Image (tube, rainbow, N blue to C red; front, side, top):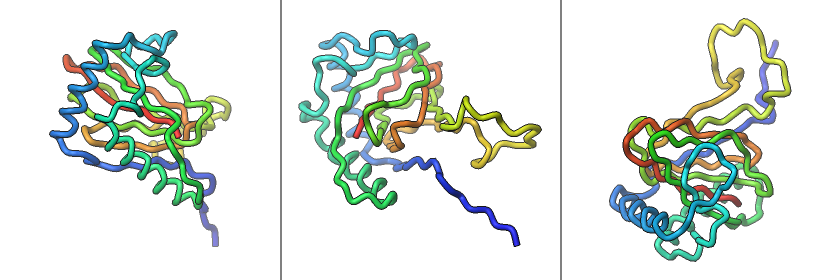
Length: 193
């Protein structure tokens, strides 16, 4: 009798409504204050998203975000427990991202880390989805004549972000964010562990 085993799976950890709407509103206000105080980092990116990555701003030193850093760290370690890792993972860095209308983020991976995470503070409708790429792409020839896409054959998986959503994933996974088509800003925080 034939069987199918799922080996070498690509897993994404999802937690919904990690913090309240009120807490997210306060963090959005703080993110806007930070944007006024610090020039954007991420030089060389084409997508226009404001980021505090590679700037003088330290998310970990900003006590406003301490509850978020602690909660994300807890969830990252829950995810690594599922991988049977008994190491305690700590954040290597975290940064704010603010995308205005027309902004996007091109495909990239987070080198020099093991786990990455993104938390969504504000996600207006049509403000951009996160897209993960199958790590076998683009090196492997795809299957031919697929009648539909599913979790076994998909080249890309898309998540529509929601306020309060946390995604945790292995840092090698290439991902991008589609263009913000909303008149409002999408605000998120990314982390590396």
